Image (cartoon, rainbow, N blue to C red; front, side):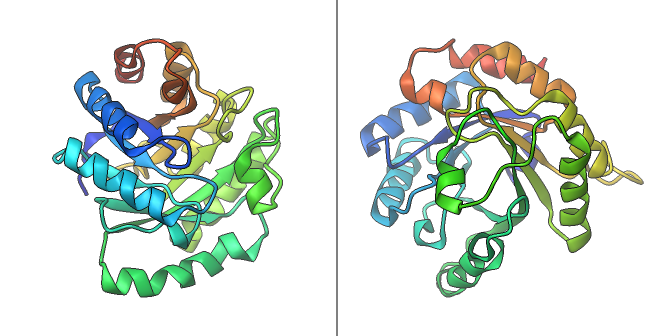
Length: 247
């Protein structure tokens, strides 16, 4: 799987509900040139046409650069990506995001066999109500209870999920704490068991500086995700984030 071969790395998240295709293409070129590992595309809000058009614009602008869908619902599926993170919101108890959206995705994936990565998605309290919390109608896990996040991670792995995504949510006041990342890294089996590669661990939300990106990587993240800071165009250069994750 091309994405997993590029870890550790920085992922740049593009929200199609906020970013028109032309601007998305510009960000995609900048991310590739800065040395990011891949692009994520997705939103907490439904917007099938926007997602598809933005993904198509990215595919045209950076045709050989990995493009991964980070879907908020089955309505956002598109065949213009290399991989779909098949997310199950295991930190919540809303059946729509535990299994129902997955069933709704089946007809599309039968017609368009885009590769998927079964991913346990954990929402961690980032200090404010984020879009994913409001849309999913689920409460985030407390940021000061790493053992609780670790238990959810281990349960997801025992069910058979192939990756873990820790998210403080778009625009969170603070990122996922290092203690939570370390606990979840340990719950996945650490750096890999018996010579097997480590279970991929994604960490995003509230990361606004290269120092925060480096802290997430140092705590065990394979992929560090930034989005809002790039969307606003007011933060440090992308190259600084890339270097921080690789350091």
